[in-house]
Image (cartoon, rainbow, N blue to C red; front, top):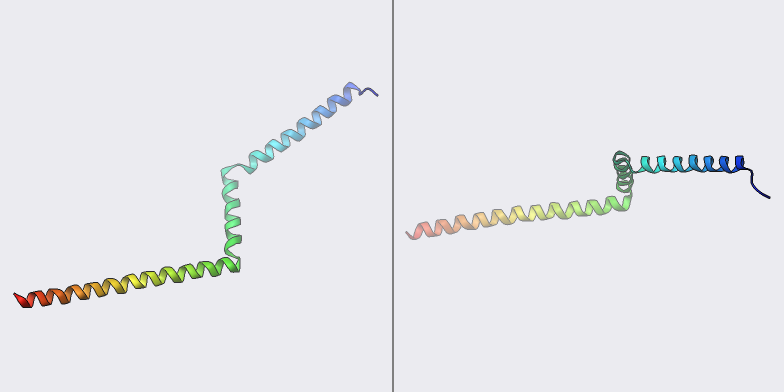
Length: 92
């Protein structure tokens, strides 16, 4: 059965509207503001995961330990230098 020209035109118009709607949705999804908001939501969700929180806490402990170790080592070196300066000053 042959299709009526009016039916074909209606189908073309419906397809155009659907395509326009799809393009509008794609344009909205790719706006930088929307991408940033989506990334924020995902990051927030990840940080609320208990496993991620434990990993971050572990990393924090390691970093704090490294800083404390560096401070103690620096003070020891400073004290060693002072001792050496006193010894050398006593020789003069």
